[in-house]
Amino acid sequence: MSALPQVAARHDDIALVLLGTGVVGSALLRLLGTPSALGVRLVGVANSTRQHADAQGFAAEASTRLLGDVSPRRDDDALLAALDASGAARRVIVDATASADTACRHAAWLAAGYDVVTANKAASAGTATTWSALRNVNLRGVATYGDAATVGAGLPVLSTLRRLHGCGDRLIALEGVFSGSLSWLFNHYDGSRPFSALLREARAWGYCEPDPRADLGGLDAARKLVILARAAGHAIELDDVAVENLVPGPLVDVDVDAFLARIEELDAPLEARRADAAARGFVLRHIGSLDSDGRASIGLVEVSAQHPAARLDGTDNLFALTTQRYRARPLVIQGPGAGPEVTAQALLGDVLALRGLRSAV
Ligand SMILES: NC(=O)c1ccc[n+]([C@@H]2O[C@H](COP(=O)([O-])OP(=O)(O)OC[C@H]3O[C@@H](n4cnc5c(N)ncnc54)[C@H](OP(=O)(O)O)[C@@H]3O)[C@@H](O)[C@H]2O)c1
Image 1: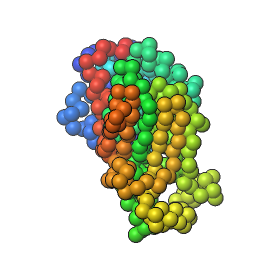
Image 2 (image 1 turned 180 degrees about the horizontal axis):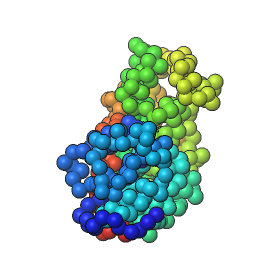
Image 3 (image 1 turned 90 degrees about the horizontal axis):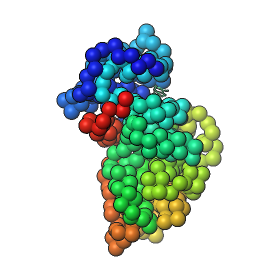
């Protein structure tokens, strides 16, 4: 991790390394090529095996070509060296992977003065040890942690919760739909098409996690609930969340390809539940909730047609916050909670928010 600048200092700008060029990373690369990202210099890009680094910067559109077979193999040090050599006022690592290994390094990167902006939930929803390390280094203010993309794909829910908590308001209850993919799936699941057909379509739209069992098993929504609970002042862990797994037992441990080849096995049990609920005038929605004692749960709930969650559209997320000061009626945040464009925009928003902050180095 060299600190020797090889190019003239340009204190008006932000040097950026992007980890992950999948659905979200590619959308961010498209945004980095627009005038909104003026002053953001892309100095490194990486997928799981290859990378390209250049402290002088390169065009975002060239990334796919630069990550070809002859590009260097993955090596964090070369990417960090490009950030160090950039001379930029802020050195930012954007994590658009779902990698636990990458998330493990967030705290160390912050401690070393690199700002971290992430769509990857594995650190802030991680174990108490991982989260404490992150929080302690964040509190020291060495660098900034941007996590808006981790919940609601950038809907202003984490910032709102932190602001309320910071003002001494106390969360009494949080209820909502935290998974964009499960929202889309159950908003469309009316019995006219098998659930598996909807799941294939949701994957094609880029709404699902790389392994859809992270959505269906409730893990992705549970991680969001942990991040939300922690933002509201509850030191809960993933194991504290009561999670309903929608994946049938025989499909839980098979590899991703085998799971995708057998997703029709989801259809019968879910159709039985849907038809049963419909016969009594209810619909199924994937709902998460947190109470004032930090008790958290996620799973399929039957709701009436009048329930706010029954009236969602597309990949909408819903966050209803009942607090001491929003007691008579909850503060409600609702909107698209998945999709590459909005998630990438949340990442860029956190990057651009670094402008005007004092130098992290
Ligand atoms: N899709 C959404 O709507 C959405 C919304 C909010 C948050 N997110 C989060 O955003 C993250 C990315 O999601 P995605 O849908 O873009 O996933 P994806 O399409 O599977 O892309 C993941 C990318 O990460 C790369 N990668 C894995 N390990 C890496 C490493 N150690 N170093 C560098 N790159 C690495 C992969 O490389 P290879 O190409 O070589 O495999 C791939 O390019 C996830 O954490 C997800 O939870 C997604």
